[in-house]
Each structure stands twice: as structure tokens, then as C-alpha cells.
Length: 568
Image (cartoon, rainbow, N blue to C red; front, side, top):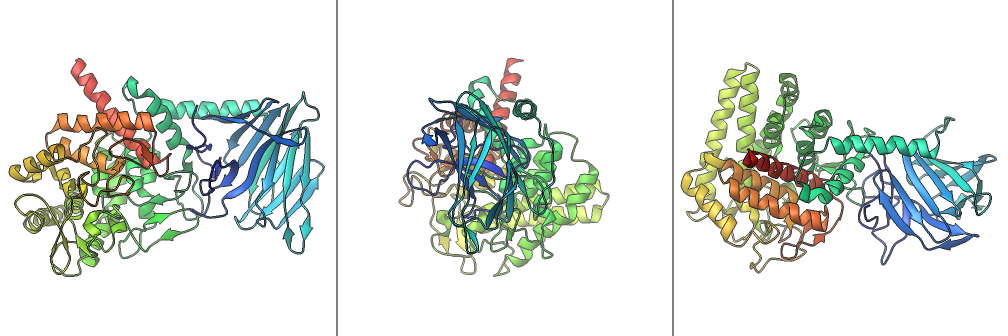
């Protein structure tokens, strides 16, 4: 069972969600929500109440992967999303009342005796409400141009009988259908989830609770290809982060690559489907729109290499598919993000780095940061490897030369003899910062000189970043550290993954496993939150995040594999 106050009820391939409204103060009731169109203010479709003799009664929510059950002293109601656009409801002894959001509906009309159509134009969606067993009572007075209110009651014929009803989404013309029973629909969904769970990465048994949470969150956050979404997409959350961002998707792809490679490839390629002619990728996308004001860091070469290492799914045909988009993405950074033309790319805003408010940006932008050059060094190497596989040997040599040249420039530009620093583009003024982002060059591993590599590892593990729970994104003793400071202190999954990989690439396996253990233990206890308090391990912000779930599974799988090796 999961906590509905933190983890929404939904299912693979659906925009239908049931959860509290997290924008309301206090203890919010549950709402049937439509999470299309991004973080929109009109996501709530109906408030959900359980009624007995016409009066709402208190209930306890029991959330299982395949069903939501609301239990009261008078009876219970169950909800199951049996198909992408179909929510089936069953109750015993009680009714289910759906109260519409005031002013959100253009009309509600009776279609036939036990069926009503509700038009929710703010969401650009229509709903067909059908009574299968029991009664359907709708109060929807119309005034001038819209319904002033909508109250829908699905009711049993008597207190001791069952009720079954259906709510369906549609956009233009409704097509009649035959419904399976609630029981059969629920059995089908439960089987689908069990298949997903069985394909989830294996992790140590002590993290079993975390695996259940991570598996459900990743399964339930996949939405279908629709509108701007060219492929099935794993949203970051179905709470309020109802988009995908152009580095978040990489971690989700990586966790799927071994056992669900087709869906993994969809996650990886979806942003390249939307790529601008210039080579830029959008910051985020949902079914309705993409945002181009920002972008995210080029970790795609790093991700692609880690994906193809897992199995043979990333064939030469797949590499051919991604080669030109990855090339354009790399050139965009080197061409359009280097205002002072010093050969060192820059971030024009913290959002472009993914570390939105990191202290490397506290003096303003644009900023030249060593993490960006590190990502591009690897991405150029990967392009060289792909070109070689394709028989384009001149291009392979060109990309390898560019990678090595950028590596030399990066070290000369950012290494001050004691550590890597960030600089203002143009003036090259050093920015005083105690941000973890300055240790991301560890992903370069043995490409770095031993003296630099050893210094980075020593500081990362002993300077104070590594707390009881993992790697803080800002040194806890920094004057700019904030407990809930977003990228100024909390532990984040992506940075943990990158730096764990960096430690492994640097031959520091024990340090990497220590970081992985800390993160997995914290997430198992605190849930798959967007980020975590570095000093208490408490989950912060959105409590049901997919990239946290994916990184948890990846790190747990790393620990499981190491355990097998040690047992041999």
C-alpha cells in the first residue's frame, strides 16, 4: 500500500489521476484529475466524496498499484483505470459523489437514461458518465452559457447492494462500447503491473520496500504518445511536475535500458524528435507544448554509452538514428553558447545547467562551468565511436581530436591548482562557490591527470559534501547552504548518479558503493522525493518523482551486482 497524500493513483499509459490538490492549503480531499497540458490550474475534474444516505462520510484511502479503495464505516468504493481513458468505479453500501469545479464546465447533458455527457472545455476534454449497476443522479443547472455547478452521484439501489459506474474521456464523438466487469478489468491491470514489476531491475532485498515504491511510480507515470509527445513518455511525476525535461528523461531511459529497451529508447529519443534546426533541445515538453526559453545539459552522450553497455538493443541502426541529432546538439553548445569565443561553452542561466539556483550562478550569468565541458568531452568521444562503427573514419578522428582539445582547454581554464572553479564568461572572474557541481568532472575518470583525479575524490569524500545520507549539492558549512534550498544543499538523484558513475570511472569502487548505499537507504525510508534534506534525509518538494525512482533502481542494481561478485 502507498500513501495517496504523496503518491498519486494512476496507471501506465493514462492521463487520468486521482490525488489531493497539492496547491490547496491543509488536508485536501481527493480529486479526479486530468494531467494533460503541463502544470495547468484546471487539472481537477471532480472532487471525490463517499456518501451514505446522501451525506459525505469520512473514509480511509488504501492505494494499491492496480486499484484505489476508499473505506468508510458504512461501506467502500473502489476505482480502477482499466484502460487509458476509462475509469471504472465499484461500491458497496455507499455512493460516490463527484463535485465539479465551479465555472469549469460548459454543459452537462443527459444522453440516455443512465448516461450523461460532461463538457470541460478548459481542459479540452469531454467525459461520458455511465451507470452500469445502480443509479446515476446528476444536478447540473445551466445559466446563460455554462453550468453553474455539477454534482454527480453514482448510487446503489439500496444500502446493501453494489454500484458500478464508468467515467470515460473523449475529445470529439463518443463511440459506444461494451464494458468488462470491474473485477475482470482490475485483474487485467494487476497482471500488467506484475509484469512491469518483474521486469524492474533487481536490487538487494533490504531495499524491497523502496523497489515497490519506485516500480509503481515509474509504471504509473508513463503517458501515451499524444499531441507534442511523439512516443510514450515517462513524466517526472503525476503530482504537479507533469512534464518531461531534457535531462530527466536520460535517467529514466537508463533505468529501463536493460529490461525494457524499447521504452528506454523512446525515452531517450523523444527530445531529439523535437530538436530545433539549430540543434537545441527544448527545456521541457508535455502533450500540448514545449518550452524553448531554456534547455538542459548535454548528458546524452554519457547516457547513450551507458545504455549500449547494458545489452545489444542499441544496434548500429539505432546509432545511425541518433548520430546526426547528437552531432547537432553538440555543435549547438560549441557554436551558440560561447559568447566570448574562448572555446569554453557557457550556461546563460542556471536552468540550462539543471542546477537552477546553484551558487555558481549567485554572481549572475553567463557562467562557464567545468561540468558542461565534461559532458561535451564525453559526448564528442561517443560521436567518434559511433562514426567509427559507421565507417566514417575521418569524422571519427575529427570528433576524437575535438574531445581531447576541449579536455586540455577545460583543465587549463578551470583548474586552479587546488580544485575546479566556475568563471564568469568574458571576464573570466572566478566565482566563489562550494557547489557539488564543481566535482562533476569526475565523470571523466582516468582522462584526468592522476593528481587532479585524486584531489577531486579526496575532497568529494572528505571535505563535507558526503553526509550520512549522501552527497549534498552545497557544502553544509557554506554560508549559502539552505536545508530546502533546491540546488543549494539538498541531495538529488541525478547528481548522485553522475558522481557515483564518476567514482566508478575513477577506479574508486568502494567510495561509489558507499554513496549508493546511503542513497538507497535514504530513499527506501523517505520515499522517492524530488530531493532530500542532506542532514536529515527527509524527502522535499514533490514526493513521487520518477528520476529519483530510476536512480534508486540503478544504484540498487549496482549494489546487487557487487554483492553477487563478492559471494562468488
